[in-house]
Amino acid sequence: MTYSIGDVVKKTGLSAYTLRYYEKEGLLPFVKKNASGVRAYSDEDLRWLTMIECLKDSGLQIKEIRQYIEWFNEGDSTLSQRLSLFENRRKILEKEMARLTVVMNKIRYKELLYREAVRVGNLDIATNERRFMQLKKKLFESPDDFDK
Amino acid sequence: MTYSIGDVVKKTGLSAYTLRYYEKEGLLPFVKKNASGVRAYSDEDLRWLTMIECLKDSGLQIKEIRQYIEWFNEGDSTLSQRLSLFENRRKILEKEMARLTVVMNKIRYKELLYREAVRVGNLDIATNERRFMQLKKKLFESPDDFDK
DNA sequence: ATAACACCTAGAGTTGACTCTAGGTGTTGA
DNA sequence: TCAACACCTAGAGTCAACTCTAGGTGTTAT
Image (cartoon, rainbow over all chains, first blue to last red; front, side, top):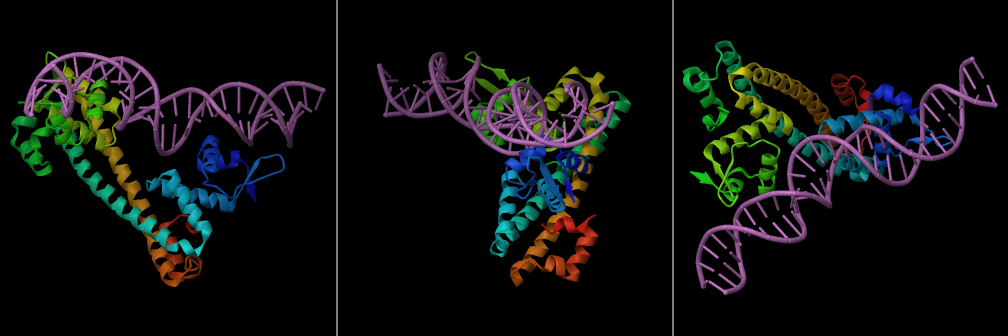
């Protein structure tokens, strides 16, 4: 069972441009072409595309994904490099989630503040009302920076 | 109290290039210049920079940040637009965190798998060992996509 | 047999967010 | 006074990841 590039566009949601671009960048070294040069994707290729999506979602750049694929093709001698890659990614994702949690608190504070501001018609509450000042103090190192 | 661009570079970690670029893009509409054209940042400007950092961290593009600053300068008539902005951001951040949680699981699976693969010297465990197959099934819709 | 259609390549263009270069001005310490 | 230094502007360059264009080929339905 093989698939045309149009089939793969429908299956993956990626554009044909993107699929060709990935190939040019070395992300799909196995895609076969028929006698007249038309791509015929295998199920194996589709599995690679799923993995590529996952790695991309985790924040890897295309050249890093290519590196992973090259390691995969070199076989068991590169197992430890691949392990490092996933370890590093996991650590980076942990940091990213921590970062997002902090940002989320700040944005939530702003949402709460503006919800009340819309209700009363002005923003003075941010600097006047005890409850907002206390919230700011809890959320921010230097609270006054968040009156903007 | 005012600060030169060099002072602000030290305080914020942003480059002088970036600070001038932000100004060009309308993110710092209040920065004063002295008679010979040299920027003198105020404490107010520094507070804006903190806010800009926060909005940038939350994923806003520079033109969206400019829009927010314009709304701020227009006063209370734009309170509800600003509320929407923070609401939308909060929702986007929630989605982003959910997305990262899913990705994290997949990357953790890979890390675990490769840790064992490095120990035994090959990757066959992924397709042979019951515990990895079960983990895959728990984590992925179509588990075989993650043998790459 | 011809028009429509899906596909191909090489290479140019786009977008966002910087980052740098060239050429110049203003201030300050030896 | 003159060299070092921090600063200025306009505009060009960079980078990643696409996205598109131009010009062409191969297949299929009428």
